[in-house]
Amino acid sequence: MTMKQTPSQTVGPYFAFGLTAQQYHYPNSQVAGSQLVKNEVQGELIRITGQVFDGHGTVVDDAMIEIWQANAAGRFNHPLDNRADRTLDEGFLGFGRCGTGTSPDRSFNFDTVKPGVAQDGHAPFVTVVVFLRGLLSHAYTRIYFADEAIANQADPALNKVPAERRQTLIAQRKETGTGVEYRFDIHMQGDKETVFFEV
Image (tube, rainbow, N blue to C red; front, side, top):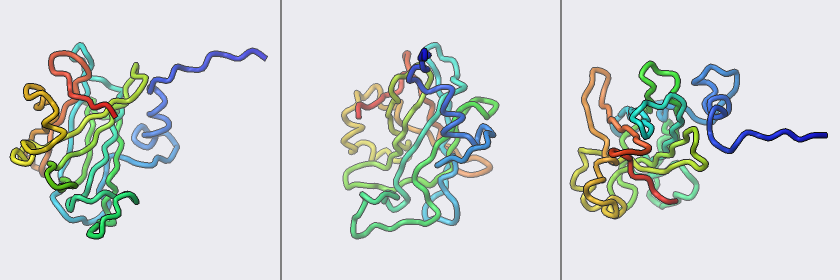
């Protein structure tokens, strides 16, 4: 029996079928979607939106973004967050996943809550994982919030980033007709390249 070559271990196009099936209207279930809020929860409801750009400044139409974050009280929906004062909202998932191939402008959008401070001396943040064609391993970054300037100045992780590049991690707040929106574009390469972390 002759074995045929298997596809290389890059993301596309398999994540649309296997990881964001409902978003792309495949008849499969999925673990997470872009709605991190199921029911009434504590905290400020927000939308995180943005686009992924390649090294030429072209919008990527088949990326996948995952986010993981604390709730408004700064607690994670995870068994390892076993702090005595841990308070959870049953309607808050804490983890989301969204592809960039279904909206007209090829953006990703997450409906969630603004996270609280998870650790003293740190700013509120959202962990972001980027899956993209051509990447052999996904890329990690963070979203910080422009309206948390004082906390951002003290954040140890953000302070490790050169000052001139920190703005690539700051989401800008905008009041819209449907609520609060934070804009966070991801640039994979080039002059505006987003800061990515080694994990």
